[in-house]
Length: 510
Ligand code: URP
Ligand code: ZN
Ligand code: ZN
Ligand code: ZN
Image 1 (cartoon, rainbow, N blue to C red):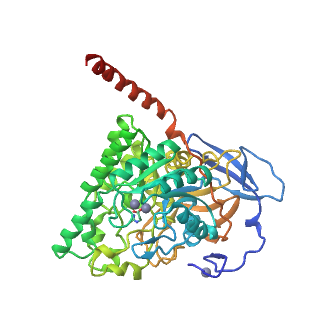
Image 2 (tube, helix red, strand yellow; image 1 turned 135 degrees about the horizontal axis):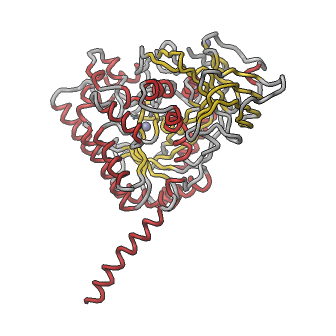
Image 3 (cartoon, protein in one colour; image 1 turned 60 degrees about the vertical axis):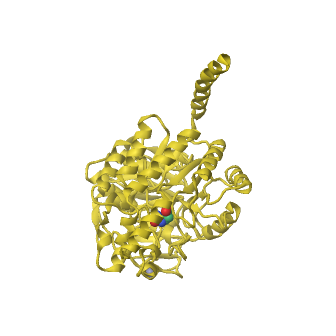
């Protein structure tokens, strides 16, 4: 369901949108249950020129206003996906969804902002950012950037200053896996953490022991295991747990907050839990695939089916997903992303004879809001307020753009969804809005449907029709020193004074 040439597209076909009601800049959402992470109430929401103007009951408006009836439905902040890879060069190919197709699909699923990872060009952050600015010009929803760091020298260190002070980037990702491409060593990790801390930028880690993964892959090939199941077998939870623990301990050594992306196993989740219990500032991100899928699919005798589930860290054995759901409910993990990173069947087939060549990544941008609702809220594991927190508000807070994003409050951006808890959804490659030809949630159905998406104050999704305009999405600058840095220096001073006492004793005794 995708029209490359058309600007407007949806179930009803393509065409150039007229200046119909949907492009009105004044919208009143009447009678819904307005849900924020901190509070919920039945109220009307009035939007003008892309901004929420009022949230109160029985608002009266003129007849130039589009009125949406939300009675019996939830009115919530649009989803924010903290983890995507659109138009990314990876494993010798390019992800198939770009900043238009991926975002358009996101809008159809109730996500109105995402944060994508800029990949440096030959280690250069500046060149990487220039490239991603080009890629993102076709955006149809708001977006921000994280920056990956893949090598270390004085130039990179200075570029990090520039990214934070001039370019609106407040997070840097370090890959502890992908040996031979993105992988960095502990020395770089420590330098990077120190630099991040000094800038008030959040370090993020892909936590798998890349050297051990390399060894695990060799083992599988030697055993003649070349299919997609070899992917899971070569990089067990043990290696994710080890790297998560190492990153957390190094972050503690540097005394910086840390964000662990795509926590996929009990092993990694328990490291996050242990650190948080001890008072360390560690943020754990779940991804939808890790919450819902299990690794049995990697054993499917049909390569084209098994290969679509290959991502890193791998989808784990049944049991891990349920534990990760519990970790979200209990606050051990704080938010849900997707790691949306799509390849079509032809690209996945690069690894038909060798799982190491299957481009890693799965879809999720369009399905996240639905699947998290069904899995967490419809199942009774989580309140609606907590749903808003893990799909939107917490991300906005961590990346310091709250309450512009992540809230239904006067003055916030009008990124809003209306979810009908009594309607149902069905997922399939036939119906999705991606450019990719497969879907890892093929055939999944559930309760709770995003019926309306409003992005930047415009109705972009309603009655199964999508109106997405290339160029309408805006870059969201994210300032440093978000709340996760509050008071971090206090631990530095108590560390220093804890050193001084024994040093003094030692000196005076010699
Ligand atoms: O398999 C994955 N996750 N692909 C995207 C790159 C990454 O590791 O996040
Ligand atoms: Zn069409
Ligand atoms: Zn990763
Ligand atoms: Zn990723």
